[in-house]
Length: 317
Ligand code: NCD
Image (cartoon, rainbow, N blue to C red):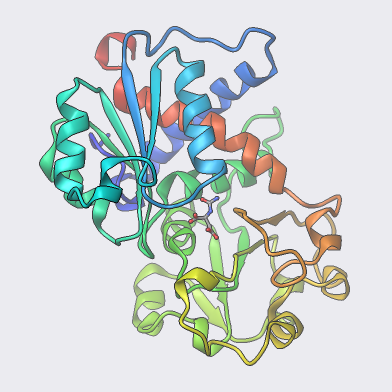
């Protein structure tokens, strides 16, 4: 396995299977009364977040702690980055303290990649601008593999499963990582967005990565085995992507009426944070088929697995 996790490109299909298999074992820890494994005892991990986060940051923190690592959280607000320190100086400073791994989120696409070239410890990309969010894609695939469980109750296969990814694809690192991850696992992705939120150049890209696209949601929903709704990322928009929130919902929201178009039992995913009433209705978010909280729970297990494989070293393998 690659020493860093910057992109799903760093992982082969076998690497993904290994990571998700370990995640399934780690998931059992969540149900224990005492949630500690000794695997990363004596190691220190820094969570360096230059963008806001609820789930990703806290689940990396919990994951590190359950593996007995010492985890330190640093955010741009409250660190010297807000005094104008460069990203390079910030990461060299924290690395000089003797850390064993760096988890980072940054608004610039490619930031984690750049940092990996500056420091000698594993870097895990927890979201870089509009580029990638590999652990989110891994936890989404894990959630789906658990949903489509094998006969023995273990993780199921995504081979031939059809998954719609719907919403603000232009601004979504979750979309970019998921297309690659689901593709490697044999799923068939249908990317659905209004023309203004379809990434430019998607025609060539979809041919290369083997997924299809649609500007319409209604004909797609009855055809898929799972649907992933993505947030409308207003903080990355300068306006003008759609006429009004209401029109977005009418065209692309998972409304109560649209729920009826889904196959029975097809899970509904959303990485969060949700804009209830915009891309997803309360009926859909809280439906029996909603996997939103399963994704959150999976996030801890998958991040434990990633930290373990990148930081534990050979003696623990
Ligand atoms: C996503 C992110 O930050 O990229 N959220 C997350 O990690 N749970 C998606 C989003 O912000 O919409």
